[in-house]
Length: 194
Length: 166
Image (tube, rainbow over the protein chains, first blue to last red):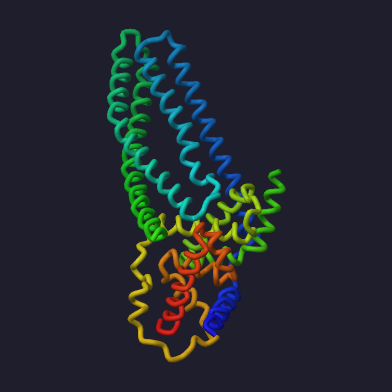
């Protein structure tokens, strides 16, 4: 008798009509998969272009120190960008194959890696800023600079300043978000292990 | 290869989509967030299907992925377990019921009661309500059969008490 009411509950539970539109869900997933692929390849293509552009600045303009610096900065940013394009998606592309608890522990590791990544970004921003100032200052004061070089320095300074400030704010926000996830995951894992 | 995966995915969704929907509902009451969670579950399923090795039933595999994503969702949304969670002590203090739970169980009340359970109990409860045997519950959640049976008994007690007094 004890389980009779449980059987009733099971019947009621399974009788609950799902409002899931299976066809729409399947189409959505296929669309999402295509979009993710497209975005990844678009970002990767931009980064590869940036790498090429950085290399051309490093080796294609008479090897002046300042130009090599700008080229190197672009090269590094593009390589990091390419890595990020992959890294930011690996969580979503990760195929779950373990138990829920194992997967949660794995999710915690990824969240912790995210915190470390944000901290590394915050550490790199200060030397990145000084490298930019030094490089642009060198170009601005080089003896054989042309008006085109001046325009290029202003444009580069604007782009880099926006990029650095954005990266700084993003890293602060991302670190906080991932830390919150680590705390919440710890709580869920503890509860599951009890 | 990809076409085969797409076709298998659609077949699995046709067969187990309603279960996915119910499991998603057991984690999230907000319709928009629930829909997001369902999308995440379906996406994880699409990614995970090629790894299915038939060591367990497909239904168990689907439920495992759904619960993994559900648990991650709880963490991601920083849901604080304990805000409206029914615990054993609380249930113990409820007056003893003098009637059996009738078969006129309200579906929505049942869903709410399942959501109130602590995570590890709500997971076994949803699987048992889906018709999983204790062994299959253990397989889906990666816990021992004994542990699954103990959790299931606690979940049943708490649910019965909540439905009588909730």
